Length: 151
Image (tube, rainbow, N blue to C red):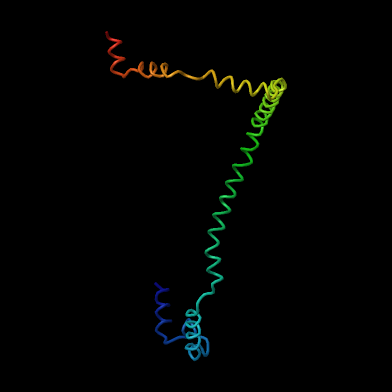
């Protein structure tokens, strides 16, 4: 209780010095400083800052796509390198063998032999009109096929 009485005595003794002071001449220049701050806010921000604000997310997105591509490309390239090299060697061996076969077969043909083979095949494929008529008339509809199967 003594502490409470001591507090009341110090409060009742009269006005004391305020705990916070205003710097000298603060309110004399307050209006000028306020107008300067308002004028600074009214000025348009430079376009340089807005361009940076626009390009920053775009650059970040591009960098993330590049990172994903690099993280996928090189490990997959290392994994598939062994299998692709085996496939390429097999393909090269196959192509070499086919080249040998083709070159070996064409060595025995001359122009006249090749021309004779082409014209001989054309003459053997001629079909008589009677054969065409019998082939076309032999075609049956689905109903006729079912009728022959069940009869």
